Image 1 (cartoon, rainbow, N blue to C red):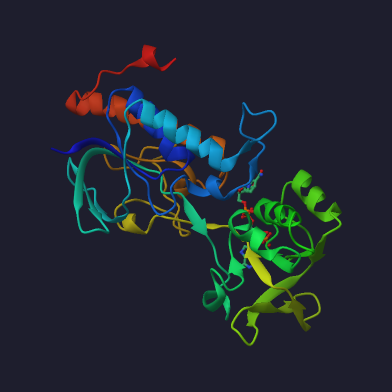
Image 2: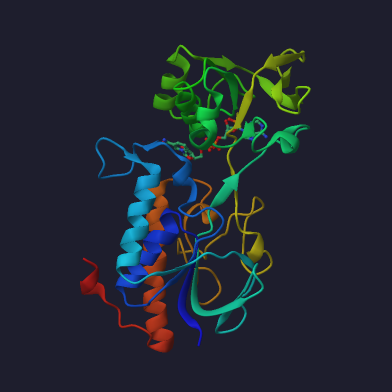
Length: 322
Ligand code: NAP
């Protein structure tokens, strides 16, 4: 028997979709993906999720969402999708463990993964030798050290500010001469005594010491053309994300960056019947926890209606949703 509905991803979008689908008695199966809880589990404090005037810990927020989805009957499975066949009335998913799944409806909420620089030294020193994309996870390893954050957005500022708790000094290396971050984040970062911006600077190489650990960055100044070295023990890369949509290439419409594109007139419906998108895998503009949650909610409500029309799986339970 195919599943009623499979939800891919356990971030804000996937878990919100699961809460709604479970409350509509669809008994959703949620595949948690490679990072259970999604990107918010690597954030320290979430200050802009409505309902938390003092802010909320990202990990705690995701834990609450998971418990809420579980309470209404969501089933969870630790699995990754390798490819998908969305041609027929029932959708087939090939999983990386070799098994397959069939489902009548599919919500894709696979999120996005950190973008890397693609420079020499990055892969060699990634994870454990000084190069990372997560200050919350790895910041404490750099107590009293000098580190560099690469990027100029909200993530880079947030990472830099978090690192000031442990590190002696935090360079904020950005390729332009102004930050892309929101004014409040930019101001907090630039006014912090431990944070020093390094403007107009492109990372050309991450330099190893004699033991293969990070000792610094080789930079080029875009304004002057001059090269330089910046000594640091840790490099925190915060230059945006890449949507996790590879299994759906050729099956669903996406833009050149790989973001899934819904059909015109809908935020979450695709051209395939009962296939929906939600969250960062389909949103290159807002990319917020609250907008991802909103898309997850929309996708589940649309799925519930479409399943009711196609198979009579569940009566729309509009009154139950209040
Ligand atoms: P982002 O806003 O896309 O910023 C990426 C930064 O990395 C930009 O400054 C960009 O430079 C730089 N960059 C991109 N590719 C690069 C490369 N190859 N080499 C060097 N630098 C590169 O990404 P984000 O900071 O991850 O934020 C994503 C979204 O999440 C945003 O909407 C943001 O507001 C939101 N967010 C919010 C919070 C919060 O409110 N607490 C925290 C984190 C993220 P350019 O500026 O030159 O393009």
